[in-house]
Length: 215
Ligand code: G3P
Image (cartoon, rainbow, N blue to C red):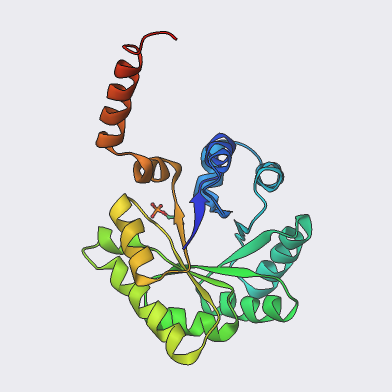
């Protein structure tokens, strides 16, 4: 499973990239707004740090507007993948952009039927929002499973990008199901790494190392 980092914070991206664990980055308007910086400036910085797919979302909701924004974003860097919302105008934009060779990440997916149509339209990635489904007492992981199965059944090449991941169990389940990618916040990436026995073990080794006589 590929791991993308779900943030627009350049320091978080630098930290995860230095560990060598991330294959790409996803952003959305809420994450960019949190940085307090202009969108394009943030994207330029991210493209300098990570050599992998970097999702940047359009804010238009009409076909012409989305295609126009997408073309500008795609021209900024070859790694930019354009995030398009899962609405009828969005699918029209995805079809046009796919035909132009521009990669898309179709976002805000909450049902298998939406995911099937996004794949038919030519989406490069589909983003099921696991945490937000769990938030309303649904089963977000079930959607990931359904999308993986549907795409496998028909040889659809759209990659399942598990999004809105909130904790390590989401990441484990997504990888067991066979999601192509999980996009994970920086905090959760660190949680994936953390183990108390590693910390206790290291503490003991370091304490014992001090008892070794100098040669
Ligand atoms: O990748 C989508 C993600 O940013 C949404 O996460 O936690 O706001 O539902 P969340």
